[in-house]
Image (cartoon, rainbow, N blue to C red; front, side, top):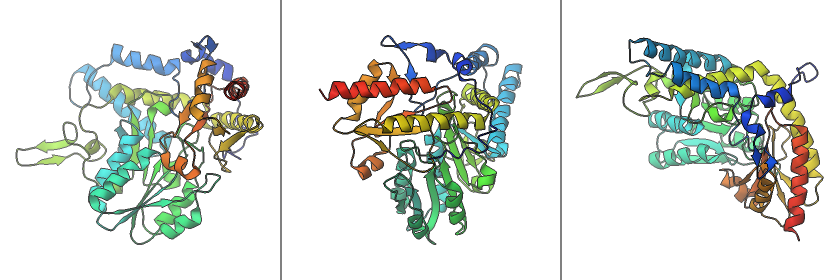
Amino acid sequence: MDTMVKDKAITKELDVENIRNEFPILSVTVHGKPLVYFDNAASSQKPLFVIKAISTYYETVNSNVHRGVHHLSSLATDQFETARKTIATHLNANPDEIIYTRGTTEAINLVAFSYGEVFIKEGDEIIISQMEHHSNIVPWQMLCQRKKAVLKYIPITDSGELKMDEYKKLLSAKTKLVAVTHVSNSLGTINPVEEIIALAHAKNVPVLLDGAQAVPHIKVDVKKLDVDFYCFSGHKVYGPTGIGILFGKTKWLKEMVPYQGGGEMIKEVKLEASTYQEPPLRFEAGTPNIEGSIVLATAIDYMNNLGIDAIAKHEHKLLDYATEKLRAIEGLKIVGQAKYKAPVVAFNIEGLHPYDIGVILDQLGIAVRTGHHCTQPIMDLYCIPGTVRTSFSFYNTIAEIDTLVEGVKKAIKMLKK
């Protein structure tokens, strides 16, 4: 397998031990054992640089944005909009194409409502895949129910890859949107998004990519991808919770209706009717998560200082090592064996429930995720109740994976007595 890391020989090596010192939580103990944190796909840990940035905002800047002439309001507004520019640069987008949301989930819901109200009619079709997170399934189901549209699914193979021939067959004159994950949160699959977009655009169909699991590991260039909508969450890229980003091409944002009404998103309010701001403010009703927005840019800067290629190279090494060591355990089956993967290894042990394995690993200080990972259709497809999911970050080590492997062996021994 591969994580699509380029120029591996010349990419710099991360100083992982020094990096770990920048993450205070990695030094805590759990049940008397050193913490081994392998639940990064759910939420990443935060470096001190990011943690301090939150305090600095409240200690020196705290004020509402876009609404005051006083010094603090001007300072908050400047930092808020500078953060938007930083995030836009990271994605190779224009600042007015960047909308602040509460996370990937709200970003997808925003498009489902605001795009759906304008462009989806009865009988139209939307294409997603069987490997989507619930956040990229339920909003489209709700839209299709509301508009009497049809939701279609790209099937996946036993190894966890999209059946691209079937995708081609699904595309038709009725297709009005394609919405797929860039990287699967439960399988680790890196989807061929360039091909997905090109095939859709050949039929003038816009594409939304759920980038929640991609942005922490892959350099994303929305212009190069030519994607229409792209979204991700701050808490998965070493930033705060409650903040996320939706990129949207200007041509779509200008046509879309507001997602919510209230302050900030209006031009003028009369008792009879109101007029709205241009994007992105049109989609940012009410007081935003100001500190979250500012600190998300701080987290993005932190990742870029480390180097996305260097991050990918280290995580690729962890993925290969963990795959090899776990696969060697008798009775262990890896779920999701795509050729191109992000640093996620999900597995089951024959005859054992994933929850029981997770409980024992927790007692050993090892944090993994167990269950369906908000991807119940995948579990139904494979006829399993869930998996044990390990997901790695640049601050994880080979030694931690060895600890995991020994922990899994111990869990098997205990549970199969």
